Amino acid sequence: MLIGYARVSTSDQSLDLQTDALTQSGCEKIFTDTISGAKADRPGLDQALAFCRNGDTLIVWKLDRLGRSLQHLLEVVDKLEKRGVGFRSLQENLDTTSSGGKLIFHIFGAIAQFERDMIRDRTVAGLAAARARGRNGGRPKALTSKQIEIGKSLASDRNRSVTDICETLKISKATYYRYITPTLKA
Picture: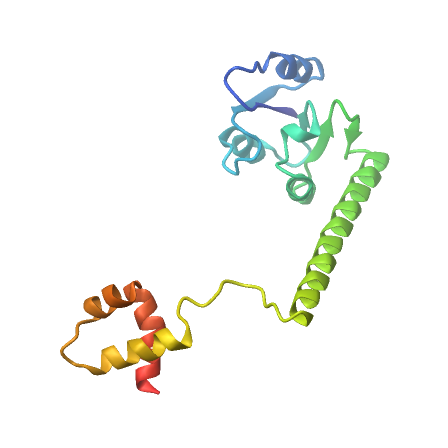
């Protein structure tokens, strides 16, 4: 069975172009969404994916109608393939039910993996360069060692409440328990 999926980002846009093309390509059932592609929760897509059975083919008008990103697109098509469901994009003339279509799609996957690896390598190199210059990444500590000493001193006075200490240091109770309490036990 040929199953169609169409999506537009806003209610101002029309699904007609996509649904007409999907109908002309032989889709017996068409699922739709009117929601941004960046949204993870797309009920029409979820219904279409759940409806697909072994031997079916999911058809979209254009690749960007299905995936939020190339990575997401590859994941969806991989899940379909594992279930014995084909995938076809009309505008890109891509069909994973054919050998050539599978090859092209796997090339897309290899390029996406290469891009992720390059980003990771650049990030690691950038962090190493920053550390070499004495800069460490990550969020700065909420309290300095001086503030921790003051907090310990205030906390050693049993007449002071945790709330009073937090107001004095202008910190939350979570910060107090994270930084002041462990140092009292040590």
